[in-house]
Length: 230
Ligand code: E4P
Image (cartoon, rainbow, N blue to C red; front, side, top):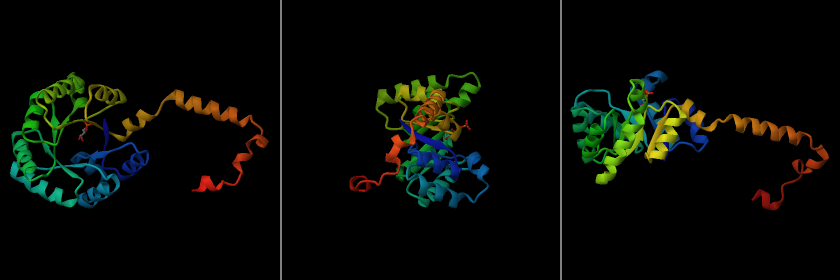
């Protein structure tokens, strides 16, 4: 499963990229507004760091407006994926932009029927929001299971991008169900790495190592051999 970072913050994106952990980034108007920076240079910089798909959301309700914005976004950088909402107008825009070879991520998906229509419209990605469904006592991961079954039945190529991820178990469940991608905030990515037994185990190993006399650790000051420096 691919992992995307759901963030427009360059510090977070650079850090996650340095871990070798992320394959792409998703943004939305809320995340971009938080940065308080000019939109286009920020997105261009994010693309330069990520070198993978970067979703950028259209900011209007009508298909014509989405198509207009989508063309401008796509011209900004080859990594840009245009995000359109899962509305009738959003589907119209998706079909048109897809016809123009512009990749679309259909966002704000909350039902399997919506996901079916996103695939019919030619979406490259569909983003079901599992956390927001769970927030209202829905079954976020059940939705992923349904979409997965429907797409498999008809061999749709639209990739399932699990969004609105709130905690590590959403990521684990998404991977068990065979979702193509999960996008998550930096805090969730960080929580994926962290385990108290790893921290305690490392503390113990390093304390035990300290008991070994310095004379037994001469390798620390040794010159690297020719082979080591190659
Ligand atoms: C995905 O593309 C969205 O930006 C995001 O996952 C929404 O998550 P939220 O429900 O935590 O705002």
